[in-house]
Image 1 (cartoon, rainbow, N blue to C red):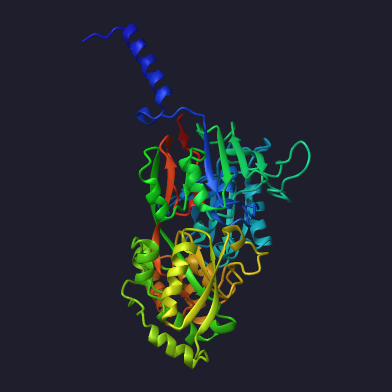
Image 2 (cartoon, helix red, strand yellow; image 1 turned 120 degrees about the vertical axis):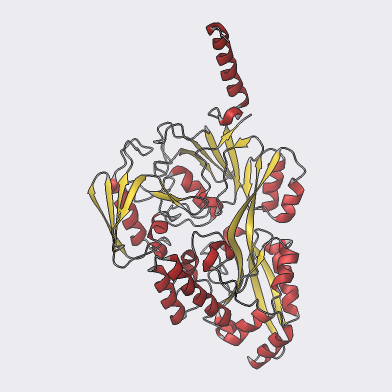
Length: 516
């Protein structure tokens, strides 16, 4: 059959108009639009220090990583296009992308990478816990070489660590707002968006598309707005009311309230996210192993998962190595029994014949304050443990200036987000001197096993090491993990291309688009 060129031209024009009108036809999206994301107010803006989701998400949009961790936990190229590792595992060589510029127009080079990673060491960023000891050098403008003192099986995850965003060489005051005509000059990244307004008084940060971004066709959005809501319920209301387009860490009861809205889609991402119920082990009642064991015996994990998590999680034990880590998770470890009578007996032996009275600090997040803490109080009461619940805004809970923040409170519940591998938890939170060792627990045998796992690249050889670590946590560890859970988000249905990362702060907006 013959088709006239005039008909073909009309059909082509019609198809183009349809693509522009409907955006998502055949997977193509017209550029433009504003995505409004609801987040808690960032407290620490320095890319090498800001740790929570809102802080990382903000910086991840302005800066780039050398390599990055994808939602499936694989490592992907970014500013580094390729890399090689020496046979002894001590030398990592990275080839850098060409034609990359910072927001101020200056060229990106290996000097910026060297500066960034040396700064991580100088200010003792939490990234160092994963990176370990290294030296970094630049043989030429397009190559960076890391030299390690000992093999580190997770070094690439350290390079992709959420704090390791690449800064401009010589940046002395990154992410500090200054007075004058260029208040955001210190927010100078190579990333997809440029900060154009930070209005803390009205709770909003506005980022504009980087027209010179080095990845062709990215980002699709014209504007990215972070709207600060410290109350999770207000975030949900703003999404339903059309003031927001995307929120994350939505609780199960909030999900139920959104499911009937045709303009909103629910996102569920499998993770190793878990609440950590912990008692400081360096002072006070928690210094006594019998007291720590009593808390475990007085905790009905099945009850907590059912009442506070709608039975949606996988019941945990006493360690952070969850089933999402495959063979690294030891499924043979017996579930800790719920035995409140034994808990009372242990407390009596420890000198608390009339019961143990404690204050429980918990962030206002994920329903931990409204569901988990009250359920925990109920199960502990039968085990002679009485707690006064103190719910704290999430921003204050992680604020070093707050007197009973997550690293200082005697007893607390901390939401631990997804990590790429078990070492992410172990070296930062449970090794002696770990930057986030909120329990202040120090165990020489555990330290040795964590170090051994870190230098063991073969997963089959690593598995029994992690099983030994799980056994130590079960015997004398200071934490309770009631469940491992998926994480939920919610997005308006006119948003396309959004893949929520297991750690939501690493969600990539470069390929996200929105239609009117």
